Image 1: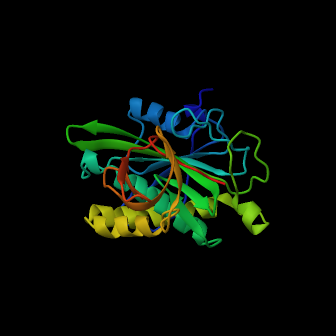
Image 2: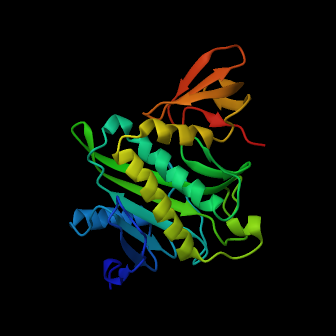
Image 3: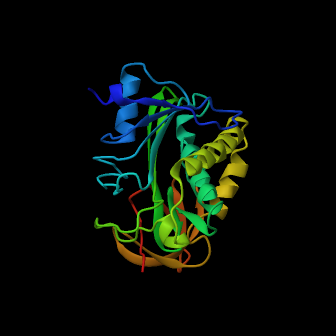
Length: 263
């Protein structure tokens, strides 16, 4: 039996004004982004399809990074969208609303979450959620986007070489049912997506800036020329990060061009 044959329709009720959510469950897959891509190749996917799984055999983070998650302990899902209204050079707004929805969802359970540029969700100096967005562009606009997210919920121990993982259970001391968290995320994301559709990009960007990890003061970073101290000035709609170092020099970085130095 193929993985597609194991797909199960899930009836998750979320009041929605923007996204016609269609939820699918797969007990195991290599990665939810890969599975959604396979469904898209056969035409068996539509705007608002959300696929979640209990276990990924090859969960991915940005670049070559691997996302560690024990079976049945965390949230692993991908949302498929066709945001054709959004210019390709503004696709970072999808990253902003996905990370905001994740931080807001976790804040509804335990306060204190922030967004580490570009879209990791942190609690203090620890990473609790990561995401991978992959888009197809037609002309000047987006054709479709995969938003793949992993949120550490009930995992107590991490064995990979990731330097700073943390889970909700490690913060609260108790297990949290997974599906109610997913339902909250779907509603939070829908609210933000509705703002984006209506053109309220300044509001979204302000919410994102106010959630930024290290949004105040000077902190250590490194780039190809070495370490330095800088403060965050802004993030462009295209996703470029603007820093100002202690000498007053303005620095502009694409993703992977600068590294946050953590304790």
